[in-house]
Image (cartoon, rainbow, N blue to C red; front, side):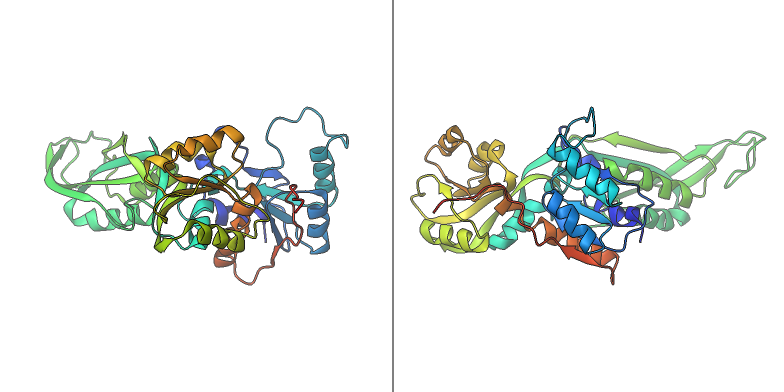
Length: 365
């Protein structure tokens, strides 16, 4: 199995274009065309994890956190990252990371946290905007169904839980080809009028190349008339954090006990209990303090995340409870997502969960 096939299974779900500007998701070490007999899944890449991959004959490590964030000016054994990189290269082990791209995709890290808590009616807490595009294309009426299906197959037309969404209007188009053309209808050099269907549909920016290519390939015209519009709409299936509802309201103490058990948190830091119990919950895997205002504005009774600093807790402002279950604890189930993506696309392939706990934080109880 080639590394690029595994990467494709992940990036079809969590495109690299979804990552934050500071991030460095993607292939960290190795080549896309190199062969691997297995994959090792982890949150963090350490020297021990590289050794584990070698022992399990896994030529690829897929991690959540990138090993390389900034630039590397020299590759020596004087730094932790340098030692890990050198060891991976010597053992011919590739390293790939999916970080904020799999944080911000629907069904990603925060969705998994929400599911572990049992939240229903899940919604993105902080949706992104500016990444949706509208395609408008004009097609002869009889050829419209085939072109429309090609566009949908390429990924366009998805709105929430609905797919194959489009708007269609019948009209009349005109064209006159030069003597060098072979027109779909009419004669070269003569003006022709053709009954056409105007089809409008939307897609996220990262699908543009494949959507347009599919449309052009299926379209019968030599020269295709189409428009692409940049939309200001929010993409309700992309962004950071998730909100949802518990099946029944819980007492704050019972909710904290459930979190501790489900996420195996050694300790949970939290603010004052809400007065009326907990029903609406906001979550964000990893470091979610920047979304505290959004959680409060969404009417959450509690916001579950990790890495809150002292002053971050004041943002609860008595209107909700903040619970810090730990960075590692809130992201540990990312490996489940990787496993599902890879095994669904590539069955009967060796995919291993790392047995090494890479959480650097310990608690004295």
